[in-house]
Image (cartoon, rainbow, N blue to C red; front, side, top):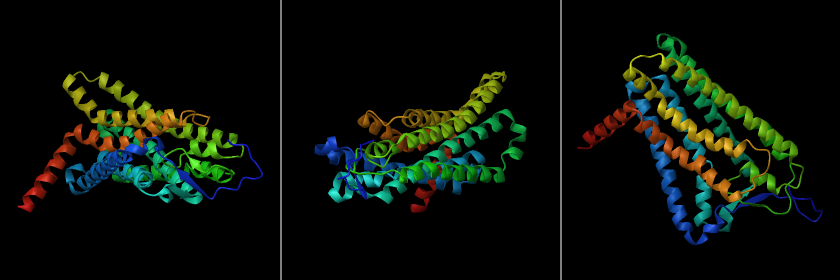
Length: 317
């Protein structure tokens, strides 16, 4: 928080400096992030199309996977294009209006929270599939999947309501330079000349509620899965059952590890540069890796992709 001075004017737009320290090699960073962004779009769109077109993948696990891919596309698209424009554009391309900044923060938080709840729903799906296989079709029907996915999107949408409202009540005066590549809460709070104690506490409690609620569902689901697997005598059957969970576990570890580090804190970030690196990891790298993890660890997805590529090649002849 900055102390208020009567001579300061209220901020109507912000300037995102992004990675100002890499000015001399900005084209290299632009190319790198552009390739990662396009690769992320291509991967996730491929997952969505394959699941929609292949009848073998019309099952709950892949239904949730398409929603995850939609989230990843939105998650990166809300931040990366603006960051790329800042690398190669003029000074005006680094500017973002006050309303635009809050909107970006709202959408980013909404999609991030939705992903937390969706990963919890996917863990529940794996729990029922392994621990209650005879009741799987009854407990995880298409209607149940639609309701679960709808609840994830709805609760995710409601999550940033109070934090964004409190942010809109803060006064921003003096410096309008955001030392980040998108409008994240921490660098915005550093620019406020209002008391940010209530806002920081709310952010902490909301983040903690989202992460704990979803992570408890995941932890309970996998505790029951492990307990069930330990009672399977056949090593081959045990490995086969656990192999359906490994991709989800890796994705959860990557996503939750960085989110717990970034957002379950009460103070404005003390190391902005380190926070930028972590932000790049969960907002750009993780969405790029998730489709690879699911496709490389899943024989059905790999088979569907191979069939789609083979069919396209055959039609092209």
